Length: 250
Ligand code: NDP
Picture 1: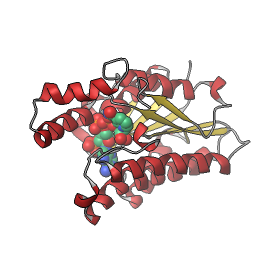
Picture 2: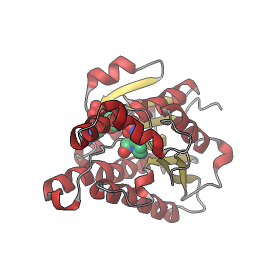
Picture 3: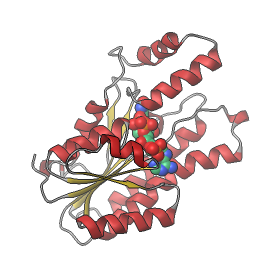
């Protein structure tokens, strides 16, 4: 697939799933703005065609400013990958308002600000792809992760609704719903589960692997392959959908 001439943005593009997608897009010829809160992380991974910019997705004014700057530098955004997110779990009785707001601010509000600001320039073009990284936690309930699950359900509802707003136009809006993917989020979850359950890191990791019916963690590249397919010219009839990359977990 040749994406030469296209400008893509990948939030959370310095690590994990976002980095795998950014690399694939850049290797296909796109100019890829990668964002995150840590410039040193972004600079370390940037390859040819990948352009780091610091952007905290919880700050609507910063998202507006940085995306406008990226558009000035590299032209209208035609591929928007709203990927930045945090995964922390707490049961209902331990979910403070502050914790709830933190998860929502990053996973749902951040996704909304990103898509809204990208659409301003995408609207001036004749082709566009909006892809949000939700989760299988956006498709069903997850024990001990009410805030996370609500934020990821929200992402799916938002993307489905935006697809309706633009249905029949040259843009598509879809969500990808991964199961457990081998990224820093999973490493942090392993640490949290091991401390909570009083088990070893290997046992905590095994718990995640067991849920996948292929008995392994998913690779970030497998999720990136789904994103790349959604960027393919022949994916234009897939709109307002969720693609599960979950090893049969749902
Ligand atoms: P990572 O922790 O590697 O990626 C998360 C990225 O989001 C980081 O690059 C981080 O960069 C960025 N980020 C977090 N908060 C902010 C913020 N406020 N502003 C800007 N950037 C931010 O994990 P993954 O690659 O696994 O996660 C990517 C997405 O995939 C997330 O939305 C996650 O919920 C989703 N997902 C992951 C699954 C998994 O098992 N790994 C399963 C299902 C969904 P920095 O800290 O430098 O800002």
